[in-house]
Amino acid sequence: MHYKNLFIFPVISLVLLASGCGVALAATHTETVTETPATANKKEVAPKKELKAKLVEVKKERVKNYIVKASQRLNKNLERLATSTSRIEEKIKKFDEKGADTVGAKAKLAEAKAAIEQAAALVSALVTDGEKLLAEKIKPKEMFEKGRELVKLAVESVKTAHAKLVETITILKNK
Image: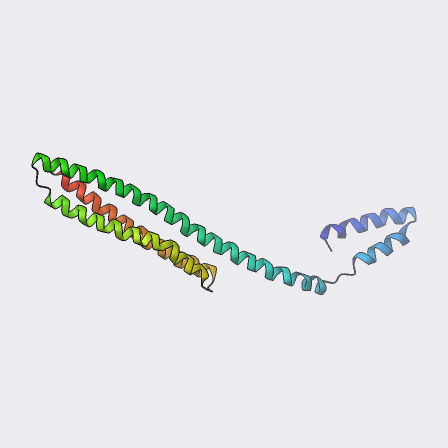
């Protein structure tokens, strides 16, 4: 029974009693009140379980979207790092043609390439590890925490690769 009905019935009953139609209202009023709070709760138990299941599915979908978007973002960063690497290689070639010493820059660039490859491997594994995580039977909160840890590892590897490229550039600037 809704709270609006509690307000409407007394008002209508007063109006109808004044007009002499109280018997009809009393019959309709008792028919609507037949539902007890105990039966109302039993009817809501099944929808609560369904809602909880839907909520878990929505949370899993959010975790999946978080991991997928993070991997897309990191892949774009890796593409930018790859283009920067090719530009740095061109600069090193120009310095070699001029006769400058670029041994240190080449070594740092090799380290940067290795770090980029390692970061790319972690980012590509991020989606597959995320799918494995979603298949596990754990709480969505724990699932999100583990997904966040996976993303943090991938982000740190991309940051390390970027730092190596920055070191290469600083070596070239000092020439």
